[in-house]
Image (cartoon, rainbow, N blue to C red; front, side):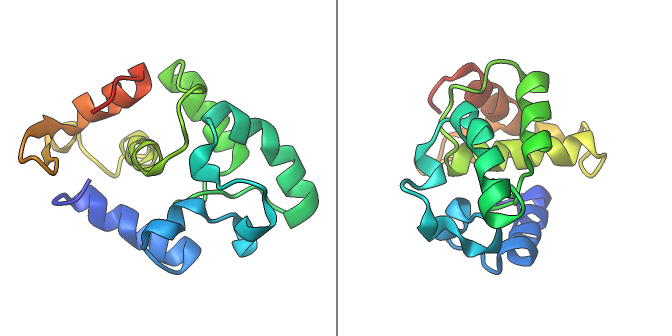
Length: 141
């Protein structure tokens, strides 16, 4: 999601919530407890992560997870709203797409901006809407 205002805002949220914007920030569990889990959350499917959050609350006092520190209820709502994304891996791309969707939902991004173009590492462009839909549909981008 680089080259967009949304990326700047999502980076700001990551910096505020987890203290950095590095790749490892996608695996952060509230209180930086990710080292206490058997697997990184970026290797878990979204549905598995949602199911595991009850134990996170018991162990870590809160279920905030990932670069943008999504709460369990937020992830459940996003999964319902976006359809069958529960089988997708909670990797960096999905987390950024979910974060971007929250920005749209909360009115931080206009519908005009949501059609902004992104460029992948091959130089091909794709709209943010297409990227989000591809992630929800389980299509590799």
